[in-house]
Amino acid sequence: MRTPLQAVRRLLFVILILGMTGTAVELLLLKHDEDRIQLIPLMLLAAGLVAVIAHAARPSASTAGAIQVTMAAFVAAGLAGLYFHYRANVEFQLEGDPSLAGRALLMKALEAKAPPALAPGVMIQLGLVGLAYTLRIKEHDQ
Image (tube, rainbow, N blue to C red):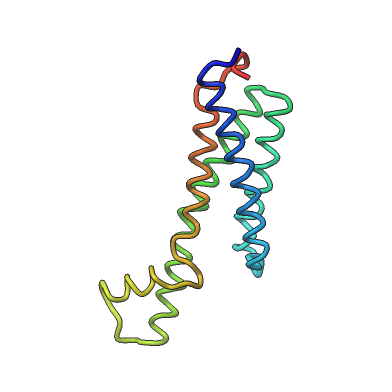
């Protein structure tokens, strides 16, 4: 019989697998691999899938630790991605209108569609879901 924690962990596992797979496919379709820095989320998503699947296949403290390290990297990469997307949008907006500043520039940069300024937030979200998945994990909880 499953405990509520085990049921929640199973749901988080499914969310992680679907979220990481879907995000990787989307990034590949968007050709988010044109330079080295754009490869970081793709590499992290691959590592995250490997870590989560490895833990599901052979639950252990080391595989749980691998998930935690990878998910912390997801959060860091998401924060960096927010910065890079926003910076690219600011530069683009200023090329079109050098007089933009303050709130007007902020809003133009956030509303830009390419690159979507807040899209890297999905990496943060997945990282937090992955960390929640490993919260209070013990061998017998598997």
